[in-house]
Image (cartoon, rainbow, N blue to C red; front, side, top):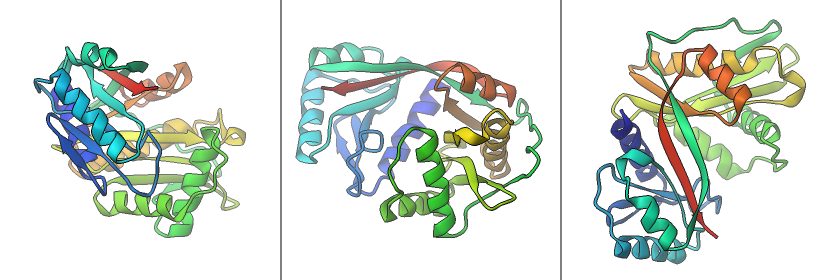
Length: 250
């Protein structure tokens, strides 16, 4: 399963607007943002990586004027961490990823006075991104490029779900990348602070996952940002499965 997850990351980075292949790495670049959480690299699963490959990757980041950063499933390239730290990278985080399959998915009820829907207009996409930004402590206003990125994700077969209150306010949402080999990553599950502790995060996660499985996805995966989100994801049927590593060059 680790290799399937890692391959899905490789393909998703290859779908960025300006991807670059550097030896065994794929560097996903988006000219509309400098965010290191959008512009990063990953190795192909099972690839043999050398110090020279790492040097070439750092140079490719420099040529693109982006901060060198990688994300990957550790078991797929077990010797890579040592090469990267020798080259000056530092570990940013180690996370356990969780999996859900149709047989384990639970669908908790949507809280009263809210409904879940897919944003169909750019104004709704902006509202969803704004709610996510606020929930994650980012006060930036969604840009046209942010909205276009979400629209492209949906057009490519990805999922976006927003939680809307009776008053029309977007309380949160989440989404998932277009499936790769029947595997998809669920990400961006967020609820604005005034609407937390009502079950919205569980309902959003379950709805995103349900929509994926309805489109013939076999495996959904995600990462938990803390104990609270871990409990939410396990509640809807996600189970721990493997390890991912994040490194950046300071």
